[in-house]
Image (cartoon, rainbow, N blue to C red):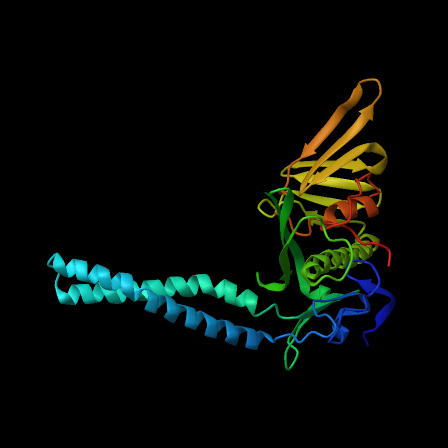
Length: 340
């Protein structure tokens, strides 16, 4: 039976806000609940997805008709001019009909995203559990999407940062791929602008905070499984480049073996003074006081950031299993688990 852990928090890591309305129970498949989020506030009357789609369709249809009617005036003037130039009636009528359809389509095209925003958003309630994730959408019945971590093959994460005036616009897309085929079993994506959300219950921040908490829980689950593999088989293997399967890493207690085609090199934790990981690329340095700080350096190419499966888990495994001095990053997308 699923339970909400005594130390369960919001996805931001703070206490559950009084104004947050959690309208669905967590499913048992995700295990003990670690964090909760909701875009519904107390006292709100949210719309369902079907009602939002219906209202949007009505507004789009009205906009298309309105633009089509308004366009009849300039189109009529164009038809009159063409007839004065000797163009026949059948052709001018066809031109008028085509232009009217185009005008209506353009009106619908511009009205659709505006109407969708005006009629939403649809409220959602999200859970991060020890063994999975869940998202409930407001409706009758409550639609839900559930991911058990054991049913996922890998997490593919893309984060893009764009400068927008004095602030940043960050687009994030996290996709958990199913074990069978290339289908997406669970997805969290969205945009935030300005300072990175770190706390609070503002609805517009919930998707980002859900993504951060979900990635941490996934990495924690992977780490538990990785330790079991190391205990049973002595090491675990991680691919460093999806396009070149020869580029991989074998990680065990206090060591790492890096494969790059025919090249295989093994490093023990005591031999590594500095290690930097970016995507699937690894740079290892050993400091020799007699020869300079970077006298011994090895570079092992791999996937670029955003092109590697379970990208944020790789440095976590190097630190927690191999005992290598991988730098701890700040909180945000791409982190290892925190203590619950």
